[in-house]
Image (tube, rainbow, N blue to C red; front, side, top):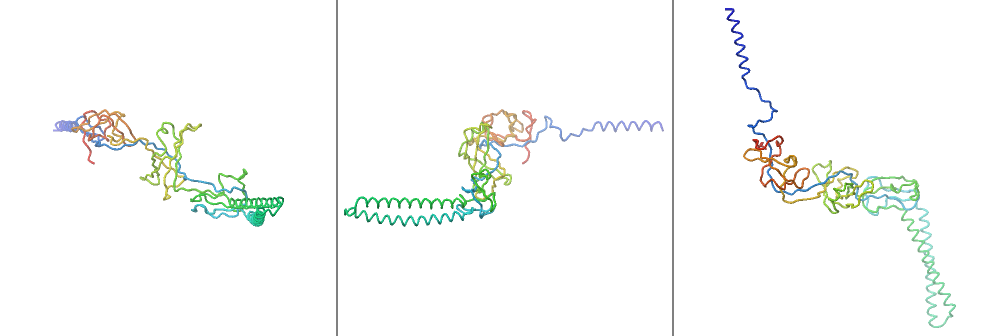
Length: 367
């Protein structure tokens, strides 16, 4: 009995090993489908559409207009009437230099004009009276000449006094700094009591007393290489994209398309202008400007990811992947024009197309 027991145990073990070895192996989930299995793919139906080739660059937004508020004469700043961030209107007084001496000169000039005007009026009456006497031959030639000379002198004195008054008014006007256009005070570069002289190196005319900007319109200035510059022109539409406003595009246009390259960089200056009536776009921030360099209407186009090696696509026919050579045309970052190789209505594989073979079985994934 003991001998039989020893014989039975190995026999059972052999049977277990045989059963395990006969059990089919478990399929690796990451294993590629065999020739008899259908690959799951996503597709796109070919339709006619508008396609634009786009060029994009990143730049810094600038106010469309910017100026330094600087007096034309030197002097001590008496008043600064605005603060950074204030909105101002065209013609508004923003700052003044000390003007007491200028105002005294103005009053002196006004008095001089009054005196000269009185002398002129008196000389004019004498001349008119003399003219009547000359017609009556009642005066000598010497007397008439004397009156005429007196009138001419009075007239010249009046003109001289008026010129002095205009000069005093001008000196006062350039001591008062006004906004040349409506905008926002972007910077305050000086303080009350500072003595400035724009004609000397100690004062920066670039900074001025104040910096005024108008960003009802904003611009982006970029330098681009020749191959892109040749595709852009003045008046061409442009779009501005900002990370602060995802999904939004601000329309604008090219306002400068320089036809001469910079001598140092060999690049061409392009400027694009955008409306900013709502004030959402802020100078100093970064934005992406997109230009549509070429546009084709009603052409066959497919997503970029459908095209492999820039030469062929797979379409689905009778649940099989069929390789189609294609000729490409205009393209951008998302779609590409197909000149030959496809027809409207063809179903193109856009996902799952890598590694497929011509004639491989496929199954379209449910959307």
